[in-house]
Structure formats: structure tokens, C-alpha cells
Figure (spheres, rainbow, N blue to C red):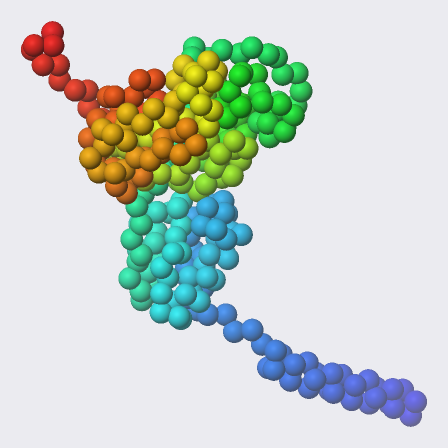
Length: 283
């Protein structure tokens, strides 16, 4: 009986000491969660796409709360939620939302089957990454779209599809969240995020080929040939030509479309513009 009582007392003493130690440790090493963190996390869409530059929505929420403590959340943005979500987040954090231009993915390749004929057959793993790593593709252009759909697989929002007539990816701007997953998936850096523009109107060069004019046009009739006609036509210095390919700065472009009018290969794309009225003397 005395042995049993002694055992109970010893075990009770050990339990009491352990409880005291655990309580002290819990107080010393306690992690206090900011009450704003779950509120911000709840507002974010939960897509975990990585378009914000963080591992997921919870990581972005943590960065937003910490940024608010430092006095700024500038540069932190959820492309999926857009302005509406960021305004709500800013309200919770007592901050002014950092304004950002709505962005959309654009495919900078005009090499449809009609203008860029296939001259070889690739018989291997049907991914853009594999085809790019093993050869120049099935056409003579070593810069153009490979058409295997890595971008389609990467998009979590169903915003990209391969047009089976042109074998080029097409972006549904209503579904595109500008998360950048397709940009990362393209091994040839053809897809770019650009401002949607006023009334969703934008102008960009649909080519990234660095080949010289004659070589580029032999591979693709719609290639930019670096002729600089567009740069001479642009009065706003929005267009530069580097390594035989033109590039339009969206911040400087005034959407006049004069560059598209003078492009000899129609490599410059003007999107969502109304059709120009034909003058009577031109009829």
C-alpha cells in the first residue's frame, strides 16, 4: 500500500513539474497571430497561383500584414482578385490600395500554319519544353510558338486554348487573371503580360524573332523584319528596334495605330479597336 501511494505521489509530482515547464515554454515561445491575418487571407481568392510572387495566398496575406506594419503595401498585389480584392484588403489594413494597371497575357507570335509552314516532323515528347530542348521545332523559325500547349496546362483558369487551325495559343481576356503562369511555362518567352489598355485596346508586336529580315521572312511571312518603319512613324518614341525585332512600350504608346498601318508584314497587332470607316474617295 505504501509502495502504491509512493508511486502515485512521484508520478503526480512529475506531472506537476512537467505541466509547469510546458506552461512556461508556451508563454515564452508563444506565436501571436495578428488578428488581421485571417481576415486578409479570407479576402484573397485562394488560387495559390503564385502570380503575386509569393508561394501562395497565405504567404501574400502575411506579407500584406507585415507591409501594413511598415506603413506601405506598395508592390504587393493579387492579380487574380484584382483591384476589387486589393481595395478590400487595404480597407482591413487601414491603408490606401496601391493602384495598378489591369494586365493581360499576350502571345507574341503570329506564326500560324498559313504563314509558317512545317518542314520537319518532331516525333518525341509532346511538350514545348521537351521540343525546345531537343530541336528548333517543326518549322524553320527557332523563336516561334511550338504549339504543344504547355501554357494551356499551366493556366489554372482556363484562359488559354490552342487554336487548331493556326496552332497558336489564344488568350481569353475575360478569364485571364495575369497570374503569369503561362509566361513561366513558355520556354521561348513568347507570352508576355501587358496592360489591358483603355477599353481593353492595346498594340503590340506579335513576333520575337531575332533573325535578320530575309532569314525571318523565309521562316515566317508574318515575322518582324526590323525595318524600323514603325519607329519612324511613331511620334511618341514608343517603339524601339533591338536585335532585329521591334518592341512597343505600352506606357508611351498612344494607340494611334499608325505603326500597324505601315508594318509590311502585319506583325503589329491592334486589339479590340473599332473598324475604321472607309472614306468615300477610297471606295
